[in-house]
Length: 310
Image 1: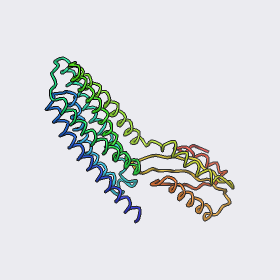
Image 2 (image 1 turned 45 degrees about the vertical axis):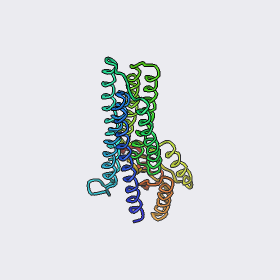
Image 3 (image 1 turned 180 degrees about the horizontal axis):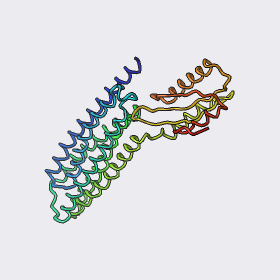
Image 4 (image 1 turned 135 degrees about the vertical axis):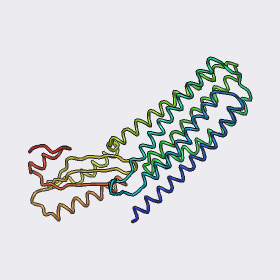
């Protein structure tokens, strides 16, 4: 019951954080669109388009997070945590679409340069939007890591990417104002497009890895191995150790080989203690153990995913 309450409370907290992301996106869209309208800078326009993607991505993330928090049912006995990877994938795809739009607009402006006006006000508005994104992005990344939520962390990283692109846009606009080189503005917009392509591809790769049952991180696997090492004595050993990550939840399965002379009670007590220690070391992990007698050829034969003939 405590775990269920804790999970529900965590989901509500993450939901509120995503609402904060929505508010930040709406605020920055308004500021950047105003900066574009005042200056006619394609760089500011590209920055505003990326913030529109931020808004759509935050709304998608909220829906996916709610889905991922749904309790297990008869068709999804291991839960719905993988829904978070769909959110990261959608966000990555939206980023790539925004990059194409930005690049197209920038190329047109390279061909037909336009004089920029009211640069000072535009820069101030864009800088204010960047402060909003920086603050909210850092909050989301921290919360995402603590809660092991790829959805929230990805949303935060997207906001930080927006900060860097905004800094580049501001620098480009200032150069135009100081030198009169009008084509600097669309060139900066093209760099913005290239930068967010990298972010989009990274999110897509991470989402794909999660959907393909990616193993736990090397650090987590090392922590698991240290736990197993403490149990390797008196004829106890392990094989078929497998791990995977599904959103905020991780899964560990392994075969526990014990001396054939042990009683069922002895073997069960050891496996039970092992499971609790693994769960303590890897919070949120679901641990499945399978007891086998060591020295039995049949025990060795099923070490692989598909059982081989002894």
